[in-house]
Length: 206
Image 1 (cartoon, helix red, strand yellow):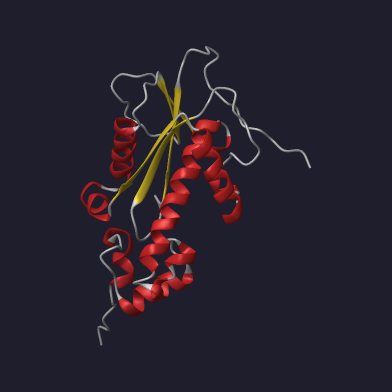
Image 2 (image 1 turned 30 degrees about the horizontal axis):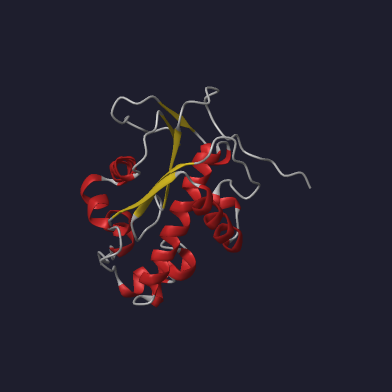
């Protein structure tokens, strides 16, 4: 089986420091959206550093440690449900990106963003890349950090709310999660704007 390695950089100029950005939890019904920024060494490649969704849980744990061991710098930020509800999920994701770039603590010259939405940061050149988490190492590394950090948080939240199954569904809309919302209602970790239609009881007109 041939292993495909992602590109280690976007720019050919070896003096340009690139930071990759990605998020996890954007489509979940509960929990924060989690954003990560990561700067990886130029030329770094490994078969496990790819889109976190293509890895199983054990592989993600190995890949996470590999990123932590090799990253030049990184930042992971949770944007909470309150912000998501007040500002909407896109703005919450963009806020998380800003926080990550504010906190990464290392000078960078270029920003690579997974997806097609980014409003810029301090005038620094950037590129949005649809499917970037399976094209560029820095975005993939950010994807892995965001996913594993958020998954860990959802498992912690599951301890007090086991009926929703967050330990396995991580807040996404699985059948168990949806059924639990209808039966038990929402918690303060749920995004009400995402689930309001599930909480509306249809009254008979007759």
